[in-house]
Image 1 (cartoon, rainbow, N blue to C red):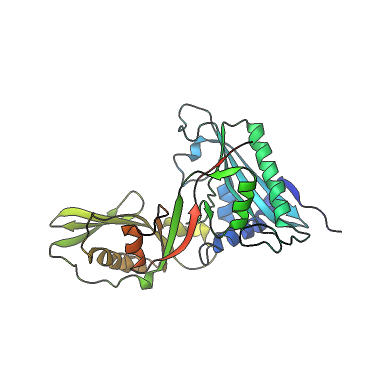
Image 2 (spheres, rainbow, N blue to C red):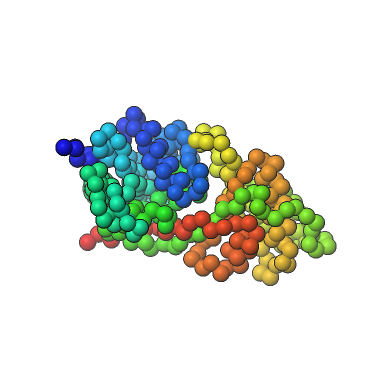
Length: 318
């Protein structure tokens, strides 16, 4: 007779199995995605990328569910301070920074368990969620939120590839109150080839931007468009496997751009990323509308849709 799953606080010796759980969920969203054990461990202590919100965190706690010596579910919780310097949307709130569990044996595509086996993923998920909600109650926070912010580049919210996680959140009373983000990916080799500028007087200038390397397009010296790429996604301590990944962190085009502007800009970015050793690049569309100019422009020039992720969830206690 097999033992029942048990919820307990994370121990350092869980680090390898926890990383397997994190990377399994990430790789279902982005091909080949994964981070190192060191990255996962570091993310439980602080999140340096969130330089505004991370200092507002006053408590961090990680739970795991162990079943027959295997970590089958885990969650990371954050409590934000109730102080005047904390932003209104975060003050005195509790966040499920992320919540992960393996699906049940025989789980259907909508996340429900048709034929759960002895190591039921649903059972583990329910035990873990109960522990998380109990902890948030003990913290006496004003609001309970989640947004699935894994320490893996490009993976946030609840992607459509995780119906089992979405089902658990909804059963627990979490409601999607935010937006849907479309994640795109392109092989750098499939971006437009570099070529001559499509208009006389069009020049490209590379500088440091707020998010990474900025490519500013100028027409007769006047800025008309720009894009920023970030190559910091694959920091050395994050590497779990070889291969370079970057993202198109920001893109701004004029309202009625010349049809050759975007492919020319992407061609210049392709050349720079190739020289940087990057072979894949991510991009994001901040809405459900797949007819936007940005979405259609990117998908016409090498990008393909990878995932749709539900960002921003609020707990409705009842």
